[in-house]
Length: 446
Image (cartoon, rainbow, N blue to C red; front, side):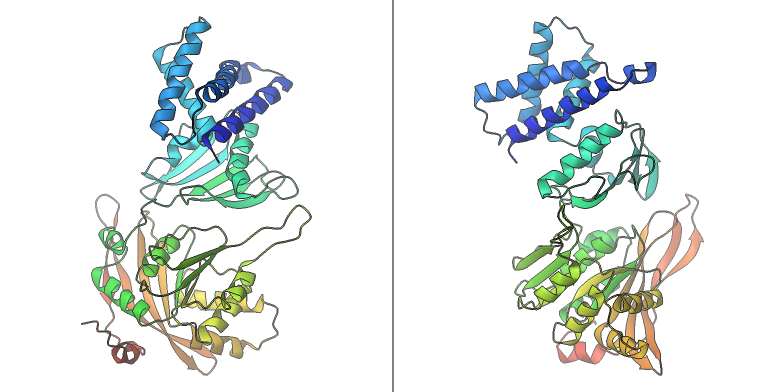
């Protein structure tokens, strides 16, 4: 979308908000929230004319745009004989930039590298996650309509929609951050936005070592497992860092292999050149045309992949993923929600049953045991830090039970004086069953 289109859309958005606010009966509380709305619309109108008359290409960087906006604001305020304090003038300019080419009041949070997650619980309640802790910010929207406009601004360029008939949506920002929005009637107190931010420069394995998410020996071990084409599931709770770890593991894949990634909302940032990125599609307004992860997994098998990476398995696609792992597509990677490696196996069983196949439990467990080689368990600890707490091998079947053995674990040793959890990564000393496979491929861990 060109700069001119984005500004025009922003102007229309502000115009709609102003018209909506005029239809609402004013109260002292609402009147004090929008003293500059008419002035802002006037500035928007002049801005469109200014761009058209100057034949601006729309390819300027943000600094040039800000200078033009600031200059135009000064010019119009002078012509209108409006005197504003310097701070108020700067805020007005910033609001216009945010509402046109940004994401409204949360634009500064989206651009703040210290913020890892943004949670808009309503017009007057915006939380962020910083350094693993939730913090209430002073950022506010004008009203629920303002929140709705920002949601629509995010999802519209992606061809997605959100309304009463489809009140939930997953989307992504241009920088790759993941967005979930849910609106009334499902969200009782008003539209809600949750943004999970991802760095434009994806974290490398060295970063995870520096953050003490894993240690160097674990990183070397996992790299060897990727090179040996083991099938790996990254397990963890919400916000535990599964996608970041999956991204790092994916970076170990050799550059001469063909990789197919499958996600609900594209988040993975792989550095290899030969990558095919697939993304699901929601149903259209008639409720038709949806393309699910399961559809994409089935299709990916016809695309001659060397590796298949599924961003997250949640349902029946688990069966197709396991079958792919068992039929020559080794070296595949995925993530799933679970609190322990054993829980991840139970979740996989449940998801396979969701595929609608009437399979006996033993057959499902045999499929899992033969398909999955390794479970990497990630956790978000109480102090906000993220750790790989288990690297667990799936050994095989004993009677009706899938057997596991821990290769690495994280042992906690209480807290320090600042409240940070103390602990260490420990190699259990157990030699993995797949060590012979690594050695036969010339991969050494020594």
